Length: 337
Image 1: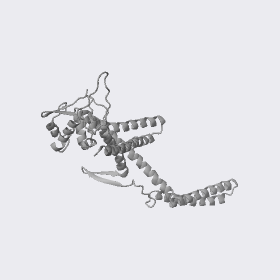
Image 2: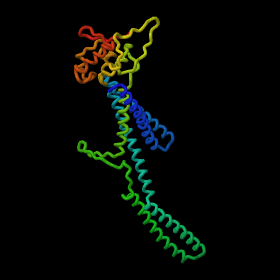
Image 3: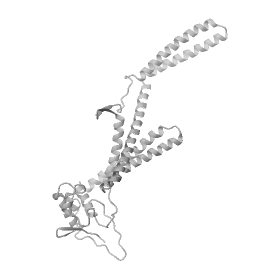
Image 4: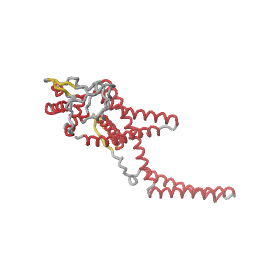
């Protein structure tokens, strides 16, 4: 994969990562804040959700970095805490999606023709009951007790009709013919260790959102170009892994350019992505100031697949770029001072 393709992929992944990160933080905050009625508690739980969301997005890349540095205890702690924060965020987002899904279906039910007709019937009965009650009050005030008793019998009949309409309305709320498919109504069941596990579409959607956001950040962190070196000012612009770094020139001294530095653009694109990463590690002294070809071939964690046929071209490329000097069967990393 050449540099131009990597930059395009990096740009799109960066954009997706920023959007997903914002959503992964905002959705749990909205859900947690909706649980509280008190203003102080609302802001408190919102800050808690915000902190968990940020830690979730930063702890995973930090855990990967510690794992790469072979500091396993911090990596395990960070990964564990990030996983807990991830699960809490997924559950909060799933709850919010479920709530929105139910609101959408309830709105569709209240807007259906049957529901509206039943509501009009109930309102009509309410008006009739109120009018008859007014007449009964007037008859009692004018000593028309016989007619008032007759009107009360009519009220009882109307009240019974109203109760039937209300029962029909409740039945419509739970009936299937008013059910609206929203795309988040499905459920999946899994048998895990003889335990039936049920997952709804909202849980799967929330998990996909948060996990994709974390993976986007991990991809960004693995692509992010190094801007400084920690142990030497090595010019690695010819590796195609990082951008050219401007090295400050001490007063009264002139920096020496690496010998035989190639100018051919084809040399920059000669290596594949994993070979360029390996070249970057060698140039920055991750394998020591005197890297050994055989040791790198046998290093399954920091090396690359393909054995001698793929590692040797990396050494040849570094030699031609002036990053390595060959002394007999040994290699030495050149440090520009």
